[in-house]
Image 1 (spheres, rainbow, N blue to C red):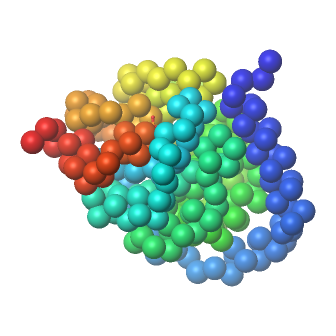
Image 2 (cartoon, rainbow, N blue to C red):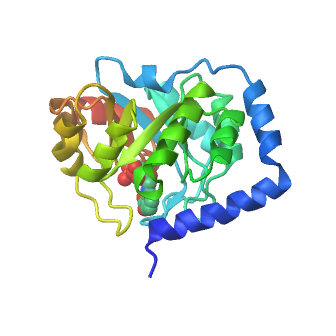
Length: 262
Ligand SMILES: O=C(O)c1ccccc1NCC(=O)[C@H](O)[C@H](O)COP(=O)(O)O
């Protein structure tokens, strides 16, 4: 029986085929290539000496179902920026995360910090779309791509002036990410096949990733103690979804995460 990740990847393949029938690859490619190189570097936003915060805009997820009922995504993104987020992750997957490419376009044209297109990239078409809709970076999940695809997609993103967050979950995937020359490696604490979250996963893989590339810790981050452990492990950035989405006051939550209770 296919697991959720395979199910989402298969649904994404179908979705992309439908989108290609509406707007051809040639059209998307021409539009993406005609766009200027972006002003907001995802890599630079994560490379500062202190830990960087990537705050996520998502209404739902497969593991949590509906996270928030009301989803004023542009206001949420503006709040993230004002609260001091370094980058914003925007879910564009429609079925399980209730995301949209339009959200990416509206958010990226409103804020002045880089936006990541958070989706299940399985086709170059999605990378051209990401550029068209204002992304500064795309997500490449190692477990749904083969190494040649990761390398080709990573190079395509760079040729369009974007970065790639190459996401891993275990040692084998980190080896693959390093071998293709990933410049930003994310380690997900969430096992995307069974939803279990182990907050020690990124700490365990920190050394293996090394310091030649940036390291992003993903999922399950709840409080200042979690952040302190990541800082101690010299993690460059942290990607936080549910905790930020559920916080009524984004600025207060980001301050609590950074500095602890006041
Ligand atoms: O979150 C899920 O249920 C999920 C299931 C299958 C594939 C991907 C999934 N989530 C993507 C993510 O990893 C998170 O959106 C991201 O890292 C933020 O996690 P969190 O802070 O725990 O919301």
